[in-house]
Amino acid sequence: MSRSRSLHGLDWLNFFVANVQTGFGPFIAVYLTENRWTAAEVGFALSIGTICSLVSQVPAGAIVDTLRDKRQAVWFGSLAISGTALMYAVSPTQASVYLAEVLHGLASSVIGPAIAAVTLALVGRAAFSERVGRNARFAAIGNGLAAGAMGVVGSMVSASSVFWLTAALGLPTIMALRMIGPDTVGAAQPAGTDDKEAKITFAGLMELFSDRRLLIFAVCVGLFFLSSAAMLPLASTQITKNHPDLADILIAFTIVIPQVITAALSPWVGRSSDRLGRRPIMLLGWSMLPLQGLLYASEFSPFLLLVCQMLAGVSAAVFGVTMTLVAADLTRDSGRFNLTLGSLGVAIAAGASVSTTLAGLTASWLGESAAFLLLALAGFAGVVLLGFVMPETGERTSDLPLHSAPA
Image (cartoon, rainbow, N blue to C red; front, side):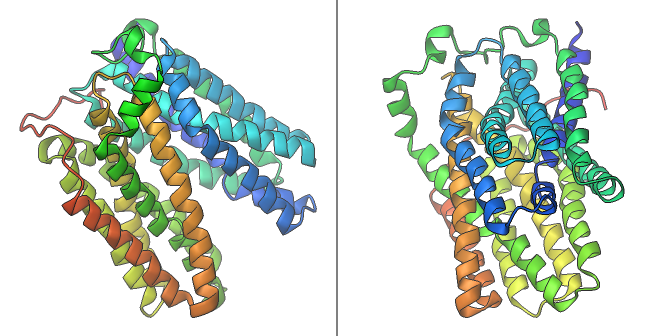
C-alpha cells in the first residue's frame, strides 16, 4: 500500500473522526430534553462522560504507548463512538445513556492521542509539525460541515436522527483508517524507541512527571482552558438576553467562524513552529485570550462577538497544533508520547471545568463584565508563564519540511 494513499487516508480519518465527534456536542442536551429529561438529569449524564474522560486520559495514553500498532486504538475509538451514538438513538433511557457516556468518555481519551501517534509514525519527526497542522485543518473542516449537516437533519427530521447519522459516519471513518497501510507506519513505534522503552514503568512515570518543562506546560494548558472554556457560553447568554431575534444566527456564526480560521491557519502554524520555535507561536495564540476577555467586558454587541470569535479561531489553531508538537518534543525517543498527551488532557479537563463554574459564580455575584475580566486575567497569567518561565522545546530550522501529502 503506497505512502501517498496512507497520507490521504490520514486526511480523511481526521475529517470523519471530527464528523463523528460533532454529534456529541449540544445535540445531546437537546435530544434528552425532548425525551423529557430534566436539566438536572441532563447535567448529571454529561458529568458522567466528563468524569470518565478525565479519569481515563492518563491510562488511555499509557495503553496507546504500549500498542505496537496504534491503528488498533483508532479502531476501538471509532467503533466505540459509533456504538455510543446507536445507544442514544435506540434507547434514551437512563441506564443506556449513562453507559453510553462512560463508553464515549473512554473512547474520546484514546482516539485523539492514537491519531497523533499514527501521524508521527507515518511521516516522522521531520515533517510532523506541518502534518499536525494539516490534521487540524481537516478536523476543522469536518467539524464545521458536520455541525451544519446535523443541525439541518435534527431540525427537519428528528433529534434522534443526529445520532443515527453519527453512527453511520463511523463507516467512512473505518474505511479511511483502512487506507493507512501497516507497511507505511511500520510497527507504529516512533523512531528512536524500542519495546523496552515503550513499556510503562514506575521509574519511567516518575521521570516523566518530574520534567519541569512538562509541569510548566501543563499549568499553561490549564490556564488556557480556564480562560477560554467559559467565554463563548457566557457571551451566548448575553447575546440571547440582549438580541433575542439574532441569537440563533449569531450563535451559528460563532461555531463556524473559528472552524474556518482554524482550517486556514493550522498548516501555517505547523510550519512556523519549526521555523520560529514553539514558544513565539504559542505566545501569539495565548495572547488572543486576554484580548477577548477585555473586549467582551466592554460594551457588548453582535459585531464584537464575531470579532472575538475570529480571535478565538486564531488561538484554537495555535493551541490545537502546538500542544501536540510540544508533547512530541518533550518525549523525543522516550516512547511516552501518548501518555504525555493524556496528562495534558487532564489539564484541559480541569481548566475547562473550573472555568465554567468560576465564570458562572462570578457573573451571578458581580456581573458578566467582572466574569470576563477574570477570564482575561487567567489568559494573561498563561501568557506570562509562557513568556518568562516555559523554555523552548523545539529545534528551530530555516529549512521547512516538504508537504507531507499532496495538496
